Length: 564
Image (cartoon, rainbow, N blue to C red; front, side):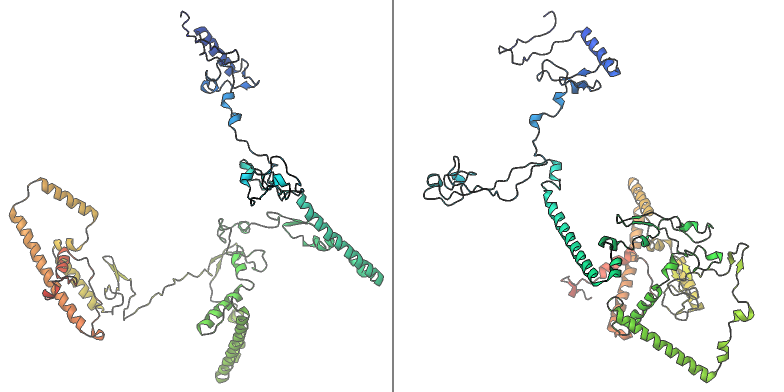
């Protein structure tokens, strides 16, 4: 025990058995040498450790990974084999060339019984207890006759991740040769047929036509390929491919056509320039290479298509069953006949007016711009030729009707605003479809406003909705009042009396309202008055309580005894 180590006795087995001795404890000197060697290996001054397979072990691998447990390898040889996948635990997958058998085997059926085959039918792929054939009186083992053929057993294949997703697994390349042979036969038939036609033309003496058709069929298809070399394309007639470039050299970007920042706007997101970039330069849009996206949009048949669609809508409203997409031919003929009739009608109307009143000489006169060499349109130009003032764009009008005055009002709706309400400035009325009352309406509105201001502030607080801040402050005040002693009982009794008086007033007003409603409901619908001026405000707590008390409940069994 002086050395401080504990040694287990070796097993009594043979020398081939692996000893289960625990590793000896290292001394301080050995431990220091081992650490120095590890540091030298990490710095690259000492050669790396080699495992049993001759591979270098990375010295930077942590010890808890590189060290081998003593119960696996007591000799503690340097190795990383215990960290690698163990072959006995790995799944065995089928190779990429293996695939299921296709078709039934074409070998001959056995003529005599084979050892190990089914005793009933004689097939070699199953036993007697698994035989699906009807049990024979005397089996094939003893008769040796009518031996059944062997079943077609498919192999059990197990593929890995790539093998399951291999689209060409099991494909036979010889199948493609059938397609190649078929096309070669078709090509040969075409050549023989062409040779026969050529012989017939030579025999008939049509030499000129033969010289024109001397090219092969492939050359005929690519006869005009070189002439179709469009800008932005490189067409090769031999290889039959088209290579499209990104942009040709002659193409100029839209934003580079006019560098003036006040010219047409370019949208970089959609790469659109709707207006003409040469608008202020004096160039004709027909002469420039690019005149804006709107110029292309309003050229060609776009305008005529829109006019035809508009005519189809108008004709459908008047009872004609026409549609641009459903029956375009019928619509086109109908539109042409309509235009002819419209022009004839205008011409007849013009002739009748000229015959009756005269004035043909005024229509034949040249325009005032040519006679006086001046117009009423004021245009101011800069020294660069751009328009400074004049020919400005028209301001886009609203889609709603403007300056419409109804019911004798002299001002439009929305010309007056007060306390969050819109109205008419001419009569201070807040009802949109009311009739104008003029100055009298203004006086009435002013008197009502003065009466409302004279009312006590308590009623104003009741009518006005409280904000969340005011509600919170009231709750805080109530909590403080609960902590301290309340005021005398006389104050509480006075508040209760006020509430009772307000509730009585609300009940009387509710009864009057119900009587008024009852009288109106008894009248005829055509004789009922229209209440155009109706006060809209939030009801008070007393009014809501009076409404609940006076409300008639049809589901109440005692409602008939209340006299309501």
